[in-house]
Length: 638
Image (cartoon, rainbow, N blue to C red):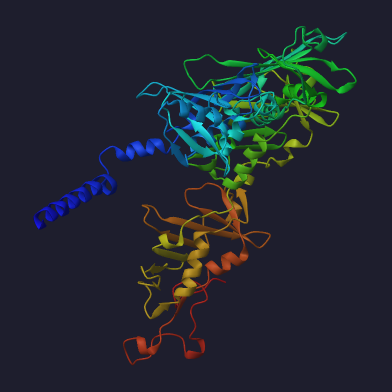
């Protein structure tokens, strides 16, 4: 008896282990099967290309085109992309709350009918695109009535006989119960602005007003007006126009099945507006989206009838919105006279009246050339180029001119030439400046036939010449780069000041003198960023630079030192000066000269002299540093 009891015990343990394997550890594939039962589809909404919905209202077919949804049944028109995407989101994110097995028995069939699944209240068919690994998939969803308790509904993922029933959130059913007015878009156009390559409009002739055509195309990543003339278009204005086109919305829908378009004035449209877009699929050709404008709506003069080409629907639009679009297209013409990027210019020259200047860029720095050569003021050159790049014509312009004489452009009063990689095929562009008429000055570029007008004082900002273009910094050195300075006052022996890596100064060639490092450092700072009070031009004998009264030579890591010569005092009590290697003379202030000429030497205290004998220097009453940088014991500058 006990032996049999032991057998039962062993059998119970074995059964327990078996249950453990099935329940706790799960057999391979069990989790996958459970997951399959607890989710509707492994669906990425972005992969869906076609969506079919059947509900109590109608049967709808939606097709994705260039990332936007269109209705192809029961009518052909734009779909509300946000609404269609919401349907897909609800389905893709729905998680079954419960799974009810179905074995195909008569009882199950009765239950399916009771739950609104035979036939289904709503049916969805989803088609996805092909990818590199597999062909597109097709999914089916049948949705029935709501459950007796909770806000859920019955659903199945196919009509197969033994397909289980899943309980899913009611939000899926709500998304599927919409009618045509919910699914259709009130937007007239639906495209991505970045995909647009052409905008065109045409208005029919009315009475004495001839027909008009306008077209702007994107070529080589630049928008160009093609009709009625070929001219540059404004990138900003074109983008604004495309944005306005996308905001155009239907006010009401007149009919979706017109048997005769004559009552709407659409048999011979009064105007058309089209946008051409590049498709997502590079293998497909460009698509032209065309809006046709019909006649006025009876008893509603502020509205007009309209229809999209290849669409069944006739709708109404606010007339002022339509007029605004057709008026905007001709005005996308670029009003800038000089089409270039100021930051890319490499050369600038101008001659206008008494104003004449020329600068050239080298390694992102600007220098004056030919006359008064030197380092140009980068900020000033940038400002001049920015003003020229932003120069716009007034509304008075001539598109077709054969005789330039009436505009003073046969013999221009001046010209401005700019070199830039923006100009093709020629590397430069010249602006010719003509005469003034009615306070407007005529101008014309070398690369376009048009004559523009600008206010007569437009070019007053141009500096008088190269001297006015020079950088006010006569010397531009980092203070830390200066290793030593050699200072020569007139005919006196030089004073050498040497700077250590720690920033202290000493003099190796003057005995019994030490250097005030703070003063020497300040003098070096002034020298390193010496400002020209004004630029004077070529050297003249009166500047006294053949016998400078002060010369400072600063050594850096560069092979040649930076040498400053200061000459005679000028009538305004400032001083003429020149940096070796730069032919243009400049003026420095009296205060800068005085500080540069002040000695940084001072008497060495007895305790540091190395001897108890008093140093050979003036008596303590006059024991001051020399008044200038001349060597001590030598005559000072009068």
